[in-house]
Length: 264
Length: 260
Ligand SMILES: Nc1ncnc2c1ncn2[C@@H]1O[C@H](COP(=O)(O)OP(=O)(O)OP(=O)(O)O)[C@@H](O)[C@H]1O
Ligand SMILES: [Mg+2]
Image (cartoon, rainbow over all chains, first blue to last red; front, side, top):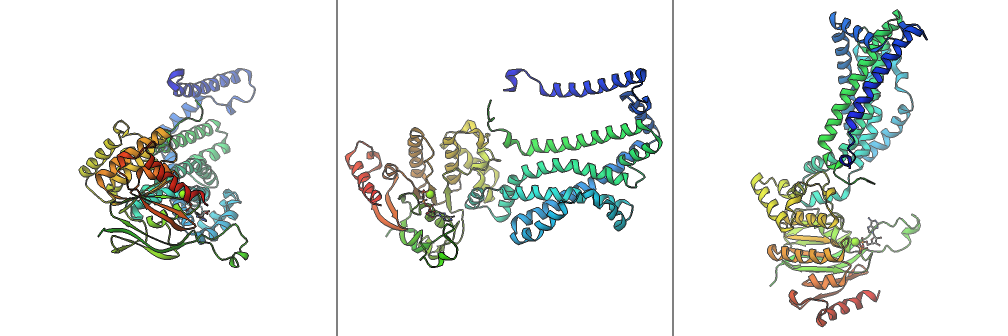
């Protein structure tokens, strides 16, 4: 279907990004002449790139990026893992679900960032409170995806696996896991955005490293170019991690794409 | 003496009635879907089960498969040596809705049973090759179920059950979703495969003609009991719609089913 139209989706997507950067640069050039606003407040891609080189030279770029990355990996993986465990047992054990579901509902109704000061009081200003906030923010919505995934298993498939001699463990890995996987991977993609916002909030509320810290620090000194650098880096890292999840999807959910289109 | 492969003794099963009010339900005597049913099936026999919709055919099959538990009575296998307590690889099942694993290819679906039994790679490959050739889907071995037509999926489902080399095969209206032409082909294929491995088959169907065409013995169910249990005394080659003897059988069973 795609081949017939000779339409190259990837090329259009890359073109779109390049066009955005070019327009941004042109607008910033124009702003320098026309002074729609103070040019310091609207740096172009070239200025941001120059700032990045400075950060690279004095080694601070690596320091900030790695600090943020470590927090993300700790918080994200902890959050996802706990959610998978909890979600699995909630889907399997009715009473556990009835006990936890209302409580999780109450907590879910409170924006997680409202807990940030509380976490700092409890766990101090260090890494623990930051990772805790990220874990908590990722965890809550992820549980829903896992529960939905585990419940989506077609009982007929479990029956046929058992009649073909599958043990409990084999049924778990060969029927339950593949059935739930699309929901879990989708949840991981959705929750990644929440992980990042929790990261930035945590780093803005008292940190001396990280991408969120660059933004607060830049605000105090009107270093708008630094701020833009941080924003670009956030977008870049987010996209890379999301792309990795998409690759996992493409690898493990090959079977899903093989079906028909609704309407050609 | 014939070897009794499956013996069903005083089997009863009822479902909770959700439709009536919960309190009143206790006053009404509960209605059994399977009601004190007795049946003996010999080894290598091909049994077809007929009956009007809702008479409990699928329930009976699910009981034999071990998916649901009886209220009373028991099902014994191999001259009473085993008792059905749950699903077992010795009792293969073919479902009306094929129930293939969508994340496995045709090959992997057929090889599922042997793989569960931890057979070695070469043996599995050999079994898969044999059954994939039998159903004529060699070119589709790497395809996922979503890429196959309804009839092809059903064939894979049958191959999957046969590849597990179960000596009992339970089939719940496996061909009812197929068009007449495919259905006729599948019936021939099924008899061919069965002719080779001679499993004991319990085959549920809505179609009287199909039952008379396939079975050694036809069971008509009604009100949770066996209404009639009749052997088809006619070689399979002679079973054709234009054969008057064939039509006699069809009309005989029609009488039992239309009475209801
Ligand atoms: N899980 C269930 N819960 C409650 N009632 C059920 C359940 N399954 C079946 N029944 C009832 O049991 C009766 C027999 O159902 P069953 O599926 O065995 O019929 P069947 O003979 O296979 O019918 P069909 O030919 O239409 O497939 C029906 O009246 C049905 O409403
Ligand atoms: Mg049925």
